[in-house]
Length: 193
Image (cartoon, one colour):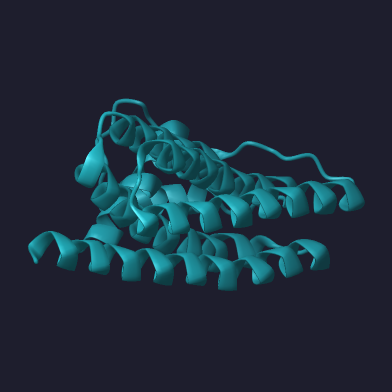
């Protein structure tokens, strides 16, 4: 299992644990159960999942801007912060125009748990260790975010405005993923050189 699959399984397992049993250990079965529990989602739940993804990215980017001095990390964090804040503004506008309230759900709770755990880990780091870990996590999290948007949210988006919002999020997430991958690779080369 690669790192992305591991993080995705952990997220889905956390979501399953919230919805199914607080005593279970994460497993592939739990991951599958979480996906089933999260289906179908209402418009408010779809919007809340995207908002939860954004909020986690915003918190981590703000931390990176406070803790790092590496220009690659700062550039990535600034772009992520700007784009995810703008996405949350679009979510609010769509929610208002559709008369929808954001609704917490199993998937959003699992994503929030994962984001909080990552933020806690990052808060304990500094210097080059923080820079590497932040960029690596951005690669993993944006890969998960892309999967979540395309595999979980889009199939549940019955409202045209919500669907358009999700479709417009995909290229931004792809750009963040690519930038984080490039800067992580560059950082790794610098530390080896």
